[in-house]
Image (tube, rainbow over all chains, first blue to last red; front, top):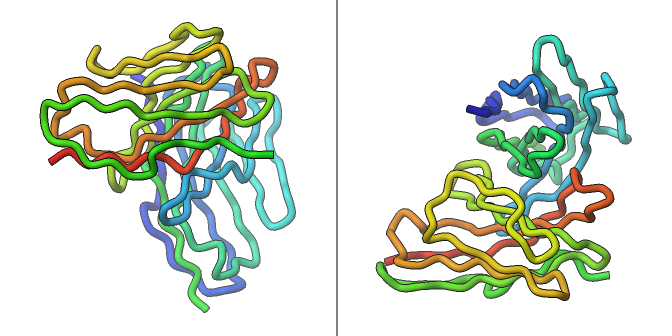
Length: 112
Length: 113
């Protein structure tokens, strides 16, 4: 069945360093890939997304890259700040299925 | 502009009981999806409602049912609660014209004792 694998499960970085989270999806028909940030006690917040017709997208300190051939996509956070500490989830959606398949999450800790 | 709102925020039930969770979508949105998030896991898709009909369903038993009202708000009902139903239940809304992009509420934390 459809599956999204996410690595690493935990990630600690020093403030100012970069963080990279990687996801691999199984359904080659997937065409939309959002990333969510979830803070304690809150719902997931959309931080960036990418569609299958684009290889890279950037929004200030956050970027996402997509490799359709390898079926993987990555989240890049540069110049990390303590407020970036949270759980990050990747997801994949196939057009017409109306559902996201989520990864298992990455707990990011930014050390001051 | 209010985002996705869910009620209640927390709920405690015992095994065998029934529960109803509520969701109001973001203004301008007409589609509601429900997800179950177990502790330490990613959200799992339960179902999606559009035009007051269940449009898609995930791998959840019939004990999980839902409804969408004419004002686009939605309810999730779970019957015959099991201990394993304890989780954070998330509602996400989207606009059918941009159906891919889903915005989540803060969730309802359900504990089954």
